[in-house]
Amino acid sequence: MTLPLMPKATAVWLIEKTALTFTQIADFCGMHPLEVQAIADGEVAQGIVGYDPVANSQLTAEEIRRCEADPANRLRLAESTIPTPKKLKGARYTPVAKRNDRPDGIAFLLRNYPQLTDAQIGKLMGTTKDTIQKVRDRTHWNSPNIKPKDPVILGLCSQTDLHMMVQQANERLAREGQAVPPLPLPEADEAA
Image (tube, rainbow, N blue to C red; front, side):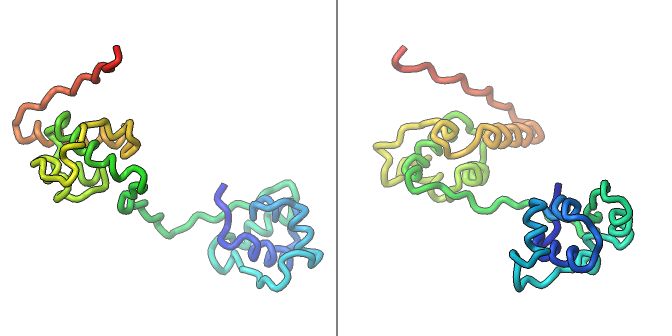
């Protein structure tokens, strides 16, 4: 269940201004009934100014009256008219310990998924087009030590993200009328 904005301050207001039970207030605010009772006794939340959920469109007066009439009823948060924002992914952070593995992952993607664009690889790996170009041209400062390794195994990206990027690249190639390269076969263990 979604909690109201500022649950403790909302609980203070509901205790002061309504005849709701402690259990009803606790369920609505995501608190324990004893904590609500402690707020009512003045032991907790001293100095917290009550937050009016009716004035802020989180509750309606009718909803409060409905629940005051029957202690078995529970308060329901009012539907918001504000559209929920889309979750945007920010820049991909690569921990310091894994940064040396990034060129290995780039080399793997360049070798096994040639249909991926530099922009897709950059987004997937959290790197720049310049770094991708240096790995491709073998002008990277650490080129002699770069060994292509699966970025999913290295923990640099998820299998879902990789699959989605490859699927997008294949769809782009199909739209352009080019042949879609086959998926690479899993590498056999060298120990076997």
